[in-house]
Amino acid sequence: MGNGIVEAPLKGDSSWSKSVLYNSPAIGGMTLSLQYARGSAEEAVDLEKENGAQKLGGNVVYEQGPFSATVAMQQLNFSRNAGDLGSDFRNQRALLAGLAYDFSSFKLYGQYQSIQNKYQSAKSRINSAQVGVRVPTSTAGAVLASYAHAKTSGFVSDSRNTWAVAYEHSLSKRTQLYGSYFRDSVRSAGQGSNVGVGIKHTF
Image 1 (cartoon, one colour):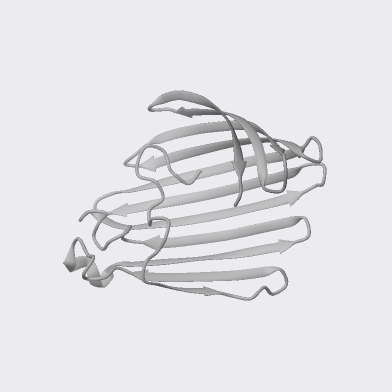
Image 2 (cartoon, helix red, strand yellow):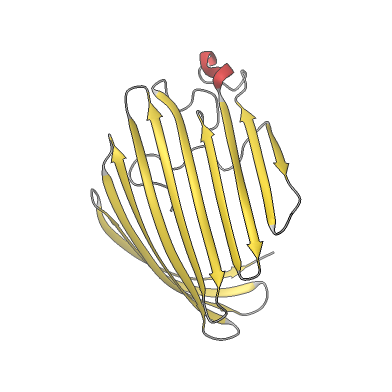
């Protein structure tokens, strides 16, 4: 859901080098994480931007019984190296909120995400929402379904609707069979779908 419409996805790479991370102990089912990173001169694509290259992120997670929720945010002005997003790029701000509740007979999920890109002369925003459900069919199997809608506004204007259904069956604690159908529709690019089947083993 976080990968936007047609323009670039959520920026910042999958890991942050040379960063400081704080993880709090759990208090009343709640934990807090904060992370900060800076670009370095020897890696900088644009040395003039090195001093201002930084990433800031954090999230709060709450878990109590069948209910869980999280809120996360990040702000950055480079992806992997200082200045690597171009001279016109100023920063990206992203916010994610999600929750889930286990009703025993099924588990319901919900998520909202907002990504804002600022440039010297323009800006764009991607707002996304997703709902999903997992319904056990036996002690080993479950049916899953999900629907998401995303809308991009600003100098880029587009919309996207995505849905998927799947079945998973556990052969053991670490081995699982699965099959899924995925349908994606982007207003400016058309529609597409795929079917996947496979086996997953956790080491």
